[in-house]
Amino acid sequence: DIARGEDAELTTREHVLSAKGRSRSIEQQLADDFIERRKDYELQVSDGYVVGRVNGLAVMGEDSGIMLPVMAEVAPSQGPGEVIATGQLKEMAQESVSNVSAIIKKFSDENISEMDIHIQFVQAGQQGVDGDSASITVATAVISALEDVGVDQSLAMTGSLSVRGDVLPVGGVTHKIEAAAKAGCTRVIIPAANEQDVMIEDEYEDMIEIIPVSHISEVLDIALEGEAEKDSLVSRLKSITGSALKEGNVSGPSSPSPQ
Image (cartoon, one colour):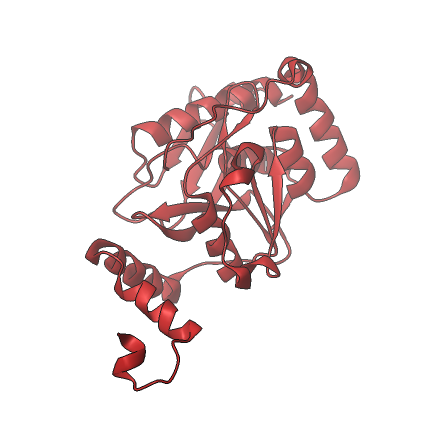
């Protein structure tokens, strides 16, 4: 119809893409419009290394991927130490922060009972954050802040996390990968269990490298700066979560729920 309306001899790729846009639901078109306007105010970083900042990924609506940076800061506590997460987190997201906290407490050499760990989901907006697909993002940001080691900003990531350090599958992985590519990232970490779910458009294949992982130690090895410090952190993390690795029980559930 679009091609005929333009009196075109053939239906081209541009006509198909235009039709795909028009056939989306009103809710999805509103989500796309929101994401486009949001770009004017985004604090995106896609190069260099930054301590305590990780490029997370999320899905808005049914199939609109967005970059969702997570920042972490560690400060002396005025009372009992606690983990403080902001960004309008809903129940499942709060639970994922609790799971990450379990790993951090076991991982850290320092007494974090005397520290406050602040976690901020940047530009989450009034709709808040639902689901647990930012778990590996939160864990990487907090460990980076605790150890004062930079995180590669050309990298984005998505993945759920068990209390034993396994990276579990998430929903919307294709849309998240495309969002990372659009934002200028050159690499993206996804759960190994989601490899079969990746169906990105051809134009994104040369823009971004997809790295499947099964354990949080692999995430740190890829994301953190400095070989000596990184090797030490990865070794320590493997030692506390080694039972999961030895048993080979890192694949997670076979059917991810959308997040």
